[in-house]
Length: 186
Image 1 (cartoon, helix red, strand yellow):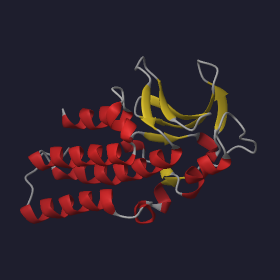
Image 2 (image 1 turned 45 degrees about the horizontal axis):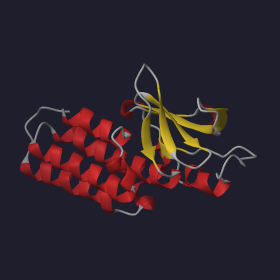
Image 3 (image 1 turned 135 degrees about the vertical axis):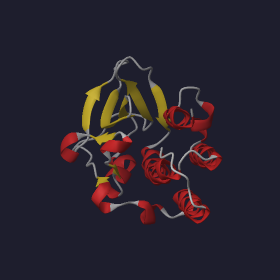
Image 4 (image 1 turned 60 degrees about the vertical axis):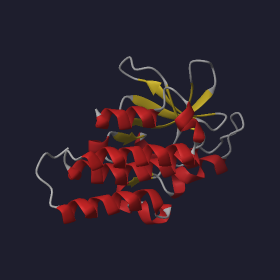
């Protein structure tokens, strides 16, 4: 985060933009030039997962922003692999320190990279896509705000949104969104 002094009007504009990131329609938040859209493989049929469950990845995509830590799956097509308990897993991206994937039941999980423990991400692909775009816009504002107490309020507001959108985010001890917010709030 930037440590320069912030003009009160500029700070107010960042706070308004951060609020918009949590309240605007998803269609207004998707940035086409930053969106990595991922196509489901030709035959899904694993567990209870359907092409419809994966549709938000193709329709909206996820933010493809190296600085943010999102590195979507290369080639734009989800790849099915077997995860450690033998369940199918469709790889979506690498985010921060985890390989993010969708289980055959439609849950989004983060599998460890660099010896970090597995994490819960979201209960559905739809919740993951929406939360990812809202995090992208929240992050854009937080990184420009500087070290002001309001940054912590913005991060708390994002985490509250994520838990309202998907209650398990708030309930899971090892939640990706909790880890990401805590890493920025010290």
